[in-house]
Amino acid sequence: MKVRIEDTCTACGLCIETCPEVFELGDEFAQVLGNEVPPEHENAVRQAAEECPVEAIIVEE
Image (cartoon, rainbow, N blue to C red; front, side, top):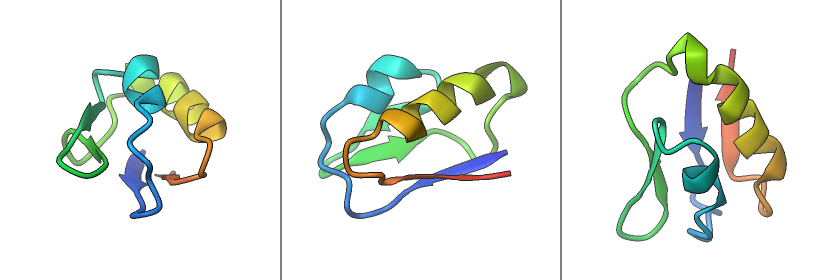
């Protein structure tokens, strides 16, 4: 699974709270750590995408 964050991100930090192993706060918005989501974090990434208030997290399966 891959995940990316669109520039509509408001840097609210919800994804970082949900899955700090995959997301971090960058200068302007959240960023994805690494190229592939480790299998053990896939559910948390899906949850972060569903809960993102501006739908900026795009999951590519």
